[in-house]
Image (cartoon, rainbow, N blue to C red):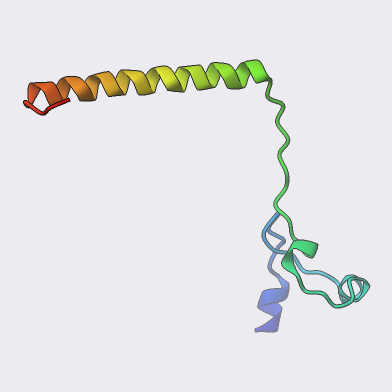
Length: 79
């Protein structure tokens, strides 16, 4: 059964086998974050891109509110 676990490949950012020497170097601290971290995907976003995205989402929200209001009025709800 031990052989089965030893044959498991590393799963990037999730799990890996660490040598005892590395664990010893870390004073036997078994905190997962010391040994396995999700890869950081750095993306560059400009203020202009974020603002444009915000404006698009705001416009979609306003459109949805108008559609909801129209449906409520159609069904005789007070708006």
